[in-house]
Structure formats: C-alpha cells, structure tokens
Length: 191
Image (cartoon, rainbow, N blue to C red; front, side, top):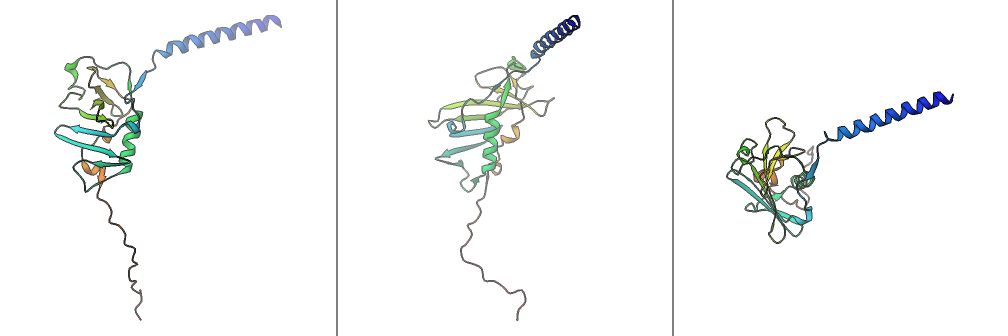
C-alpha cells in the first residue's frame, strides 16, 4: 500500500509542477493595462471636446456644470455621469500598437483626424490632452495618443460616442416650471 501511495503522491506532484509551469507561461499572453486619466472627478473643473472644426466646452461652477456659449441649455446629468464613469475607468494597453508618428493618420490620432479631449483643474491648468481615434479592426476599442507621447495605444473600450461636440448631446432646453395653480377642471359630462 505504501508503494501505491508513493506513486500517487509523485504523480500528483508532477501534475502540480506541470500546472504551475503552464500557468507561468500563460501570463505572458495577458495584456497589461494602465489607467489613462489619473485624476479624480473632483479634480476636473473644465473639459473641452474638439473634433475637426467643432468644439464644445463644459465648465463646473461650484456643484453645477454649464455648457460654454449655450446658456439656454441645461446640462444632462446622465450624459455627464456616463462621460466621467467611462473616462475615469478607461485603460490603455501598456505596449503601443505604433511608435511611428507617420502612422498617426492610419490610427485616426493625428491632430486633424483625431477627437481631442482636454481636461483642466480649478486653476485652469491642463491635466491632460488625449487624442482618440477609431480602429479599423476592433470597434469595441479606440486608439489613443497622449499629447506628450508619440506612441499610439489601444484602449480597453470604445468611448468615442461619449466625446460629442453637439451641444444637444450634453444639454437640453430646461423644462418650464410647473405652475402651482390647479387648472380649472372641465367636467367630462356637462349637465
């Protein structure tokens, strides 16, 4: 019985060793990512989205946000919350997909083809300038270039649809206040 137990223990040990060797070799196929925006929501007091010749700016004053140049619109909180949720959780792959600035237009991250996002703090200091582009092969992700980095990276999700320059995406006409006076009721069946 002792010999059978020894064989089983040795076989189990060999299986465990093979398992750990396999696990270590699989780690090199895991994509390493890094968060794009390191600042928090409370640090961002203004942001600008720019695409070609269109631009929109949202500014925080105290606790509310306003769309610059569009005073008649009130900011949609759902659009703003979705923007912050997506941009603050966005990650980029650690390894660039291109290191050549000549390929920027191929990945739609050149100054003229990309969608620019500028983030500013309360002192109007630039926290970050990001240029987003579309990939031609993976529509669930974007390409990204940081202003101070010539490399192009792949993001972990697509957020370009959140980076709109249309004022009506970010805001809506305020609803008229409801009057406190009850309307005169009209009887359904006149007497």
